Amino acid sequence: MSEAIIIFLFLNFLGLIYLILKNKSPDFSFLTLELKPLSDKLIQLEVMIQQRFENQKEVNKLQVSEIIEDKFKRVTAEQNKSTQDLIQRFSDFQHILSKQLVSMNEKITKDMQVKLDEISDRVRENLDQGFKKTNETFTSVIERLAKIDEAQKKIESLSTNVVSLQDLLTDKKSRGIFGEVQLNQILHSVFGEKNDKVYRTQYKLSNGTMCDSILFLPEPTGNIVVDSKFPLENFRRMFDLSFTDVERKEFVKDFKNNLKKHIDDINMKYIIPGETTDQAILFLPAEAIFAELYAYHPDVIEYAHNKRVWITSPTTFMAMLTTIQVVIQNIERSKYTNVIHQELNKLADEFSRYKKRWDSLASHIETVSKDVKDIHVTTEKITNRFGAISSVQIDHLIEP
Image (cartoon, rainbow, N blue to C red):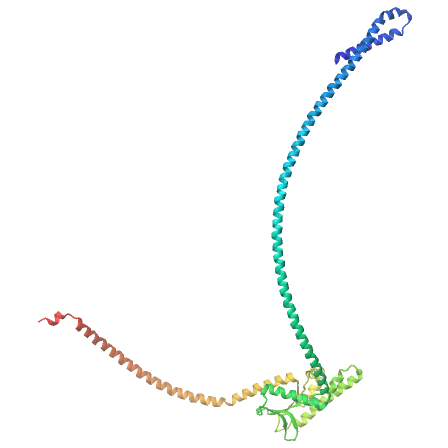
């Protein structure tokens, strides 16, 4: 390659000389003639060199192309090999992954089946329990509906009875009878239906007045009269909103005055010195009226206390009678205290005689016991002697 470059430079140099000579004056024409053959050779040489250069260039191209093709083939072969390796590795990986996925899928399917079975069992159990509870609830609802229906019928019947009761309580005389009946029921529930020693109903006093009931209490309390009053009319008007405030205030006054009049009547008719105690009881058969009095009308309560009249309701009257019953029982017990004491003294005397007799008997028993012991000792001695006689040395007995 370096020789071709040297030749190429030399030819260029000769060409330069040729051009110089060609451009000189005609004096050197002979030199031109002399150099022309040389110039032609140089031209031929240049053409030949150029041809060789082109040939060498083609050769170099072919060599480079072969080298590139060889490199390409080797690179392609290596790439193919690498690709085959990658394909094989990918195939192996795909196969392993496929196995793992299949195994995982089977495990997941199995686990899911187990979970589904558990869920199915729980759902079935919950459904069974739900159906059972639903049936129980439905049965309970049916029973409650039946009870509600029965209660509705009773309410309807009660409504009819309430209407009848309202109609009944509208009449003053009927209200009085209602109060007396309720009073008698309370007396019966505490003391019994017939207990003339403790109470009587519709009892006639010495002044000719007939009282609703009378309690025969032990001294020093004495007999106490119970009278039933039911001031319902004015009480209902007090809360009737169809009346004006002014009218309702007047009804309140009428209600209080009506009660005070009843208190005065009880004080005058049923407190009789020497026959009854110095106090009496006014029985109100309605808890609402009693509560209204004690909550908002203390002046009426104070007025009754001053007149020695005690106002009670069904609840408080029941408590009062229960207390009276306990007092009566305690008094009855106290009547027999002396008798019991005397009997206990007699029993003590008898027990003293019993003790003396028992001590004497014990002494005799002790003496007999001592004699028995002595006899027992003697018996033992005799028994031992007989034993000795029966088993002793016969030889000693028969010796001369």
